[in-house]
Amino acid sequence: MQFDAVHDYQHPADEVFAALVDVEAVTAKYEAIGQSDVQLVRRDEGDDGAITMVTTRVVPLELPGFAKKVLSPKQHVTQTDVWSGADSKGRRSGTFTVEAKGAPVQVHGTLELVRRGAKASTNTTEVTVECKVPLIGGKIADLVANDTRRALDHEHTWMTEHLEGA
Image 1 (cartoon, rainbow, N blue to C red):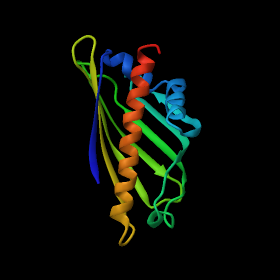
Image 2: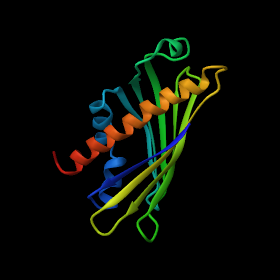
Image 3: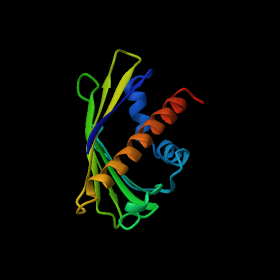
Image 4: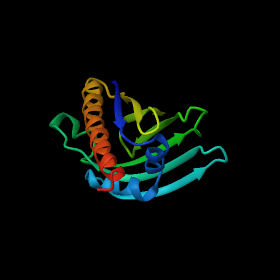
């Protein structure tokens, strides 16, 4: 299952990026959407402005009956975001992976943050969800993809409010 989440901000790309990799903002964002036990595992910054950030958290899932044998209603996940430094146009790209402890699901994809003029930017996340469980793997991938899409939309709403100083 693949999908794109495209989120526009009425804020400069460097301001949006700073919030996307700020430990306090990331923690507050996850907690605001109902996730818990958010922890920073590692945050590395390169000389060129590239940033790698690894976090862990507990993600609640509402599970239909068919998924309860394969997934836990509380997924312990580790997320790794790897962002490049900004290019000459202010564009940043990267990758992310989300690993759920003990779950047969892989979530990964690409990240892109582009400047749209001096005061606006667009963050695009391309998401791939895979589940290699016979017979129900596709249904589980759809379930996780729908939950991921909702989470990304909620994160965008929270980030917009955060950037506006709410």
